[in-house]
Length: 138
Image 1 (cartoon, one colour):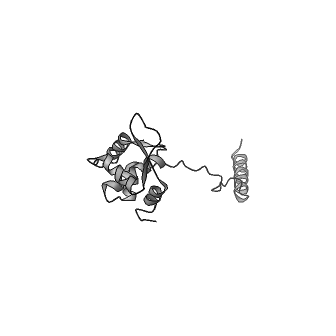
Image 2 (cartoon, rainbow, N blue to C red; image 1 turned 135 degrees about the vertical axis):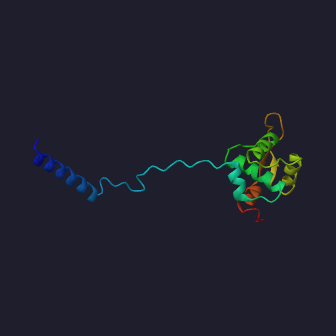
Image 3 (cartoon, helix red, strand yellow; image 1 turned 90 degrees about the vertical axis):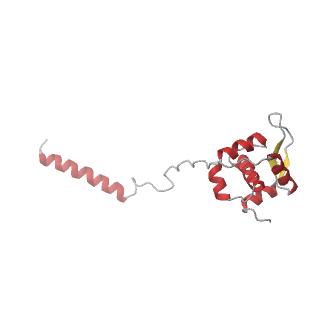
């Protein structure tokens, strides 16, 4: 193939590409693009966003995280303690007491069934709203 034929062929290919671009055949719209999977938020990140001010609020935030982000139906004292460690937060001295304080406020309630032979809890609607509204009463 001569240089002239090669140039003509390359020009022809370029013209086809330009035509495709002009008609939008090669352009991807945002609807066509595949979304990147969202990374899961860590308990540490969640604590930093929510900024609980005391151990009772921290316990509620950990419970909320377990239900919403870890999809746990209920949680026990071991789940709470493990996630305090993962958040690099000191575990409260008496974690059960912090849960009971949340129960008294109407933010948590005892689950119907035990989890791993231990008492388990879940958040109430009021508790969920309290966390979602950054600890402001509704």
